Image 1: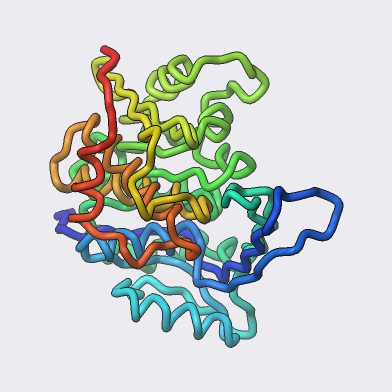
Image 2: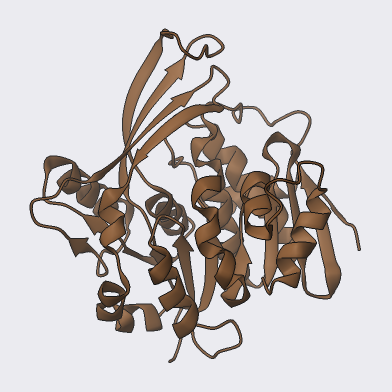
Length: 324
């Protein structure tokens, strides 16, 4: 298998319905705010961010044949996302994701109706094998069935000559789908809660981030990038190379947080983009935070201002430190 300069994303695509409260969100109550609808999904968002960073991107995902499915397909075409890997389901609706945001843009809660992606089983991936084989990187998200993660991990082992696999756990509930296959991934980008699930530390609340990242590495993961929300990002790689990058105390003008729901997707895309560019681990930490800041400053899950020059320039203002 000969890899090209292409990234293939295997994951979820859905309609995002976002409700943002004007005041601090109160659970079990009605909150005055604003409702907006966007094309979204972890896989789709990562793919659009990668396209905006200048890479050739193909998305392997699932759509139905309803109005929402057609809107999602058109949005991908407009964003420069290739759909050679698209699976179409007759008589089925597109997936939908409903999220509630606090006044500061933080996630207060969400409901994901992602049944369509459950049909992306190994036989359907096998039918897209030539497309997958052509990639330099394959980014998969944990919305896809565990059997499909297993198929990808078996076909593209980390020490093989084919595409490198990268993993986004999506959420704590789904993160465990990738746990048995960590040894196949070049990198994973969990948040701290997702990392705890992957490492088997879900009931160990006092565990340090460094301990969790080291456990992931011991389980075979190539590089662990653990996002820490407003605190920054912690990374650990081969030879116990460890980095921490911190969000500036004062954010640059125009980058105030509006909606953090797409920040992790942008960070994953930036890490992958940096890997293709040959950037070191510390630099990729800064690029990930820069991308997350840009993403969070837009009401939409993917900021139209995302771009290679934008994250490169902003990353220069990100403080990072090598721990070992």
